[in-house]
Length: 354
Image (tube, rainbow, N blue to C red; front, side, top):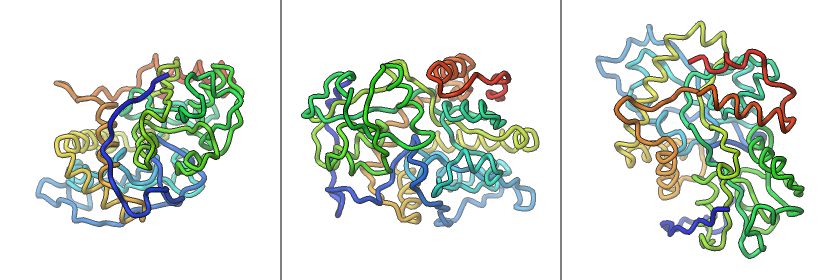
């Protein structure tokens, strides 16, 4: 159990005291059926420097992000706005996750060339015969948490046994389900949407969340850090790597050079985002307003800081964005042991094609 005691910067925003049902979630990741497809329209002029590739020679690539616009994806927004993709010869389209349309589904049907997925989702898809491959693994560890009110006498993980617990639908539920099954916990699962309202109104005694999103939303809604008991899944052996870039095998073969260039430009975007966080937040907020989702700078700043902590600094040789075979084996074996997949795919090594 992790009792987080941190003084979080407060903010006021009209209508935020009790969060509206329109509030979007992060990442991470993930109440897939309840969102609407949002393609943010152009809201700034991209850098058309002389070094940019001519429009006729640029390769179009469509990327579906794992959630609505937010700082979880700041590096992509920065790379697009600063013309890094165009300089790399890419005409990039950034799509937000859609209503009843997950990034995995969009990738499977060819609606997009690339998608941001968690490793657990990718292994599940591969086990079901979807020929996904990983082209970059940006987040090497997990930020998923279970959050409970301390006043409900939940102090240890075992205390949620028999309680009402908010669980995301579909793919994002995999790590939470893995935790519950590993610990032999019998809970009353309540479908959780993209807001924290169900928890605030007492509809559940614990909820799924991301440390960089839902936890901070609860603090901003007026709860003291001391009033919350936070269980980080990574501390209970469920440390499943999260945001990775995936493509279908055929797409990776046919557009290998373009995808490599896209990944390199994305690296530049994240480097710039962390070097100039306020500039990156300007872009995040523009995307949020264009998509008509709540936009709050202080919350997005918190998120960007937490994402930076997850990714770390690039170091002398840049970030290690490889998908490590030991992580694939560890997560795949956990999913198989918990009967969340029938068996490890015989060609699972092809998942990490980088």
